[in-house]
Image (spheres, one colour):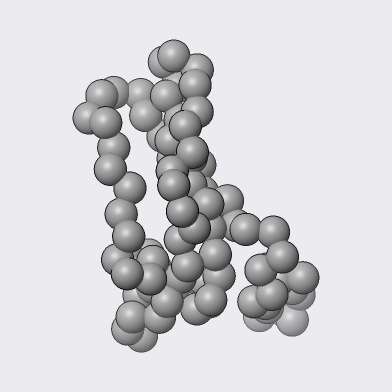
Length: 83
């Protein structure tokens, strides 16, 4: 579940698990597509989750999928996301 700031339904993301101690990365299978759940909440379609290995010094890298056509504008009308 994510706060809605700068998110729009239809955005897609890929996730990598980063082991900062061993300096390795491991991609998480699949693409996480964002859907609108409530006024202030968004989550991945199908409620997909990332299982962490339960050891210290882990992080997630979450990157937007290139070519995602959803666009979001800030209060000044500047484009933040999209093509």
